[in-house]
Image (cartoon, rainbow, N blue to C red; front, side, top):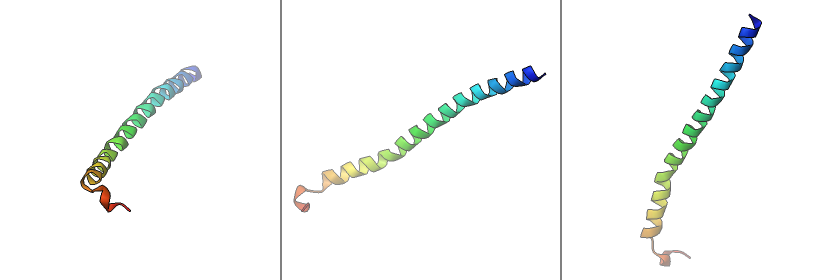
Length: 55
């Protein structure tokens, strides 16, 4: 019985470790997607403002 429990715990650990990696990738992608509007907005502001306005 203890052997079966040890195998079960090991299997759960391996499965959940892969799930954590997947969640980390999803979070990284979400963060990068959230940064896009700010990068686009910054590029638009840079394009609209003239170089004469800068000191």
